[in-house]
Amino acid sequence: MNKCNLLIAGDYHIYGRFNEFILQHPEHKLFKNELLEKISGYDIRIFNLEDPITNSRIGCIKSGPYGVGSERCLDAIDSAKFQIATFSTNHTYDMKNQGIIDTIEICKKHNIDVIGAGLTPQEAGKPYIIDINGIRITLLNYSRIEFNCVNNQHGGANPLKTINNYREIQKTKQCSDFVIVIVHDGVDVFNLPYPKLIDRMRFYAEAGADAIILHHSQAFSGYEVYGNVPIFYGIGNLLHLTNMPYDKTGYMVGLSIEKGNPLKFEIIPIHLDDKDISVNILIDREKEIILDKINDLSNLITSPESLKNEWLKHISNLRVSYLSSLYMLPPLFYKILKKLKLLNTLEHILLLNKKRLLPILNLIRCDAHREAVIEYIEGIFYEEE
Image (tube, rainbow, N blue to C red; front, top):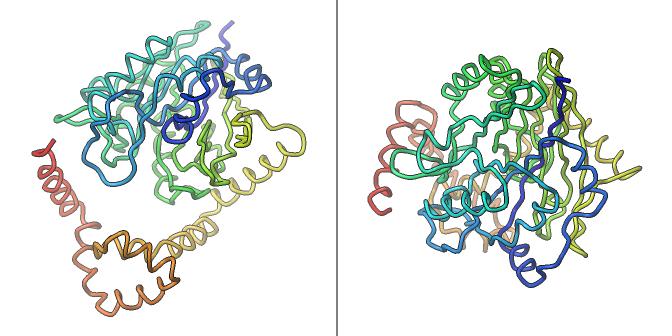
């Protein structure tokens, strides 16, 4: 019959509060019946596993928080019968190679295939091919590069590298009816993509991707249809148990696939109720509110001037944080000044000698300098791994 449908859900965060809760309440039902019924209507069900599943607590060398959870966190995933976990995230290598090995083995026990991560570049970058109802679908999974990505020294996530990714998309398109690209990138807790991310995703569409779905930023974003290719710039979370309001609402994307025709899609808003720790689909007026918000964000994304203005506002809100990092000020010092509402004063002091930033700008902006600096600093820490 040459038809099938596919569901893609966002970030499933299993560290911290949720991991602690589920270990204490092993019989808890995370997903409501209405959500489970909706998910069951799809032939292929995919979610993003944000963190490694392992008992190891030997973390990699990195800056920023670590994520790790227990096998019990997969109970909800089992109930929804998700079959595929994208694991190319900024936390893939948090518990080093052991975390990757354990995650893949544990997911396999639960009949979940893991893509986008591995112990070698070849394993992490292996396309995932689905043959269903006479249709061949290839899934490709990439992540932004932090301390997470695979290389010749250790395992990790499949990296977001434009030239390599472009070639992979073109190659897989030659032997696939549809190529779906799932990307872990975006701006933390910001509802819009950074401008160059849009250029890159459109480039991937030109390479042959039939749909592109992004997650990572926690806050959901809008979408565009570029040519016939739907690009979703941030679908938010499947689950993230925090006190932050932006973590509670996201959406899933349903793709209807028919051989010889463009993809059709459905947006399925979902919400976390942190009082009873449950996730459900939104309906009626609550659903319409989220769809209207997504539409507003989509209009901003397709308006370069409006997007640039929002991007500059976002940068302005973080300017002192960036300055503090560039000048290597102690994080505690920054937090104290922020609490005392003295960040404007700090910015003024730091910029008294703003020419100190020019060498840093040159190292960041120039490809040759940036590549050399990255290679040198990574080399220092690889010696300690």
